[in-house]
Length: 492
Ligand code: GLU
Image (cartoon, rainbow, N blue to C red; front, top):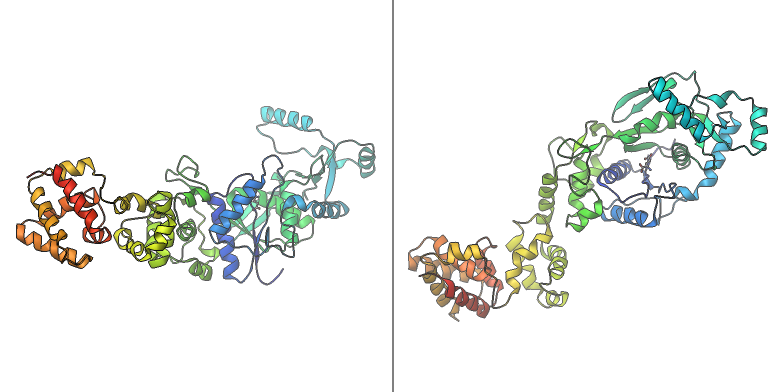
């Protein structure tokens, strides 16, 4: 076995990359990075009816978006390729010949119908089907060969070594797991049509690719003893296994569409940042030190270890993910923040890229208005639409009733209009604030009584981003026009 670990993520392209798969990929990736090992991506596309190119593309796209770069695999190549199972049939047949030569397999002539009949009978009479009853195991070799030569349909089964004793898996996450040998049936290795079964192909690939650690979802735990028997039959060293617990929704049931988005690309479309999703996925079963929730992938890569992976099911907490996303959003500043905000503003029809290029400094000033209030960049357009509506702003009805149609509103607006119309007043946040605070004194009123009507007039509602900063970002003439419009509705 090589000294540096080789791990793999082996998705079947029968669907998109989901949260569970993404976490498996992340843990494999982090494990490889932690130990200076190799992260292999292998596409298990042997189910021709359900595997699609679109799904493969989407899986690769999602992994790239999450920053989970693979060292060997599709589009990257490597010494152990090809990395698509459908292109590796020769390897499986070669391994099969080896098993045949070692007497580890036997041909089985029982038809699918016959087996279905036996299964139905066993389920009805003996309280369960214990697997294939090994009818063909004892057919003498020459007789079996004669039947094959005569063209009789057959598959090939593993001759489970009955004297083996328990199969013991020293799982790096779950500890010791024992599987009694008499619970193992003589599983099919090669189907009647000559194609390899899942368990067989996976083992051939993992051996050929020199995989040292198999880190995967615990839905595969029951396959593991079967796979170990295949390793042994092939005379290969068994890798370390680590099975990751299930991910549950907040109600304790398996995470599904009912709980919320399950596909990585859905999160991308909803405006989540890859940094936040990675960080959140890292926490789904692993912890840095038991308390730190926010950490970078670099930190994860220097600390990740299987010993700290929990064997208990992880609960997906959508609110925590949102919170984390907000934390990452706030980390962006200046041009970086603008780069994330720009597509949102453009998609919402508030401006064009040309507008942004022409007034970069202005756009850079939008961040302070919003960054403390958002968890996603896509919340920005609705929050700042008033900055893009020229001399008129859409007034929120409730705010009009609660603020503009209250005593004192008119005086506040008139006072503000006068001060802001003064050409002597420089159009900066500080000067605007100083002037409006003077107004406060003049009117001898509480800040809320004065600033709220101005806020509604200029920004359209009571809960807008900070007022003075907003005014600074608008043209003086537009602000005055908005105040005039509000004055029409204001009460004495
Ligand atoms: N192709 C399998 C799946 O998508 C994974 C196999 C493995 O990790 O061993 O569930």
